[in-house]
Amino acid sequence: MIERAVIAWQRLGTISPARGPQHRLMFAVDIAGFGSRPPRVQTHLRHVLERVVKHACQAAGLPPHSCRHEHRGDSAFVITPLGTDFAALLGPLPQALASAVDRHNALAADTAQMRLRMAAHAGYVHIDRRGVSGNDAVLLFRLLDAPPLKDHLANSPHDLAVIVSDYLYDVAVAYHVIKPAHYRQADILCKETAARAWIKLP
Image 1 (cartoon, one colour):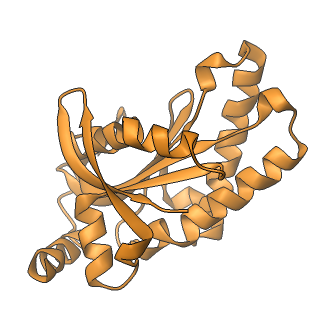
Image 2 (cartoon, rainbow, N blue to C red):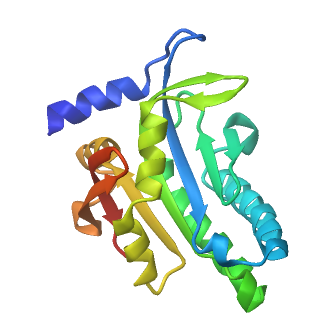
C-alpha cells in the first residue's frame, strides 16, 4: 500500500496542461432530507449551505476565492487549487463544517435544522467555463449519495457524516494524516459505480 500511496502523492502535485485534465483535490457536501422541506426553507438552506462551506474553507486554510465552487441545489461541489495540502480536507475542513452546522442549528427552527454529508476525493477532472467533468467527479457524487453514508448519518448523534475515497484514504494513511482506527470500510454500489470507500467514525 505504501508504494501505491507514494504514486498517489506524486499525482497530487501533478500540473497538467491548462486545457487538459488536471489532478485536483475535491469535496462535495449535501443537505440530508432537503426534498422534504417546504420551498421557502429549501431556499433558505441553500444560502446557509453556501455560507457554511465558504466559512469552513476559510477556517481550513482554503481561501474561498482560490477554490472553484459549484452549488447544485442541495449540494456544493468544491475543487481546490493545485498544491493544496490534502490533510486540510480530512482534518480542519470537516471540523470547521461541523462547527458551522452546530452554530446554525443552535439558532434555527426545527424545519431549518441542517445535517450534512461530505465526500472527499482526489482525481483528474476537466475544468472549463461550463463547469467540471470527469469520472472522478462522478465518483465523488456517487460517494456522497451512497446508502452506507446515508445510513451512517441517520444513526449518528452528530450532524455531519464524512466519506473518503479509497484512493485518498490510502495516501492519508501512508502519510499518517489519518488513523485507520478512525474509519470503517464501506462497499459502495450506487448506480453504475462499485467502489470501496471509508466512512469516518464519530
